[in-house]
Image 1 (cartoon, helix red, strand yellow):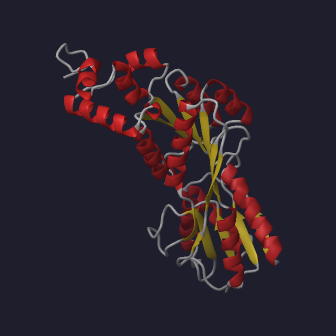
Image 2 (image 1 turned 120 degrees about the horizontal axis):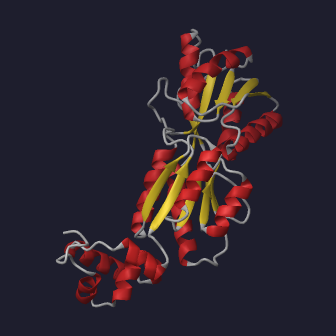
Image 3 (image 1 turned 45 degrees about the horizontal axis):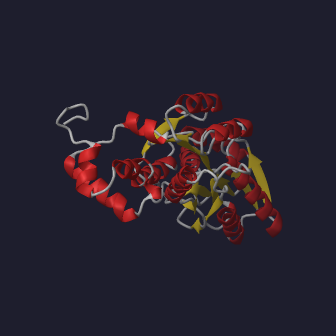
Length: 331
């Protein structure tokens, strides 16, 4: 039965069976945080049994909300983001909300346009690795609740995957293997994570007395990694840390095409741990906890929706080095 069918179950039916008011049923779907968890569970279970579906238009009129969150990512093809999206969607559903997804293809202008179009529909935004300017982000936050992932803007709640410890451990690991000249293969120039990882490589190298070579920024893709292989060889390093696993995978393929062995000739470390053991040799990498970041971001956003005056929070997720088979003693 559809909600427009005269025989379709109504909010009144659900309220009668649950022994609550119509307003409580509405809150169980539109603002569950104000109710006891057992009340929300009972109302939703009865609604599911009846086949009741809330009317989004009526809900928006009564609560001022549409029951929709928007999550914007820069590259849905990058395997870092699907686990984050999945966890965010799960958390949104738990809160009785739906998740709209936008993909910007690393284009800040497209992101800005997309956010503008979704502002009328979305109750709040999760901006993952946003490429927009800080001013644009603040303008959005003045209109709708916003939580950032891997973008550090003071005064706005954000979840940051703190790569510093993991990247520092990677440089130390390579130094212990005898590597004295290590490259960092950069990612997108607008990426907060790229800047953090670049600084971590520099600082760790300076502290332990090895040379760090900074190679130009790349779009995070397999193809970009393949094209970066000649530049890596020209730098005459014996080891490299790539911005992420996708870039590292492409580098491995580009080196293999030129008869260069990983890790026999060059050791390689990725970041994010999204390929796990899917490449050969299995990639040494820095963990990223993408799913945890997605879940935490939606939790913060729901908290802000339920309590607009709550202070902003800065949540840091630790990282660590996972040693596999792409690092070996310096040749």
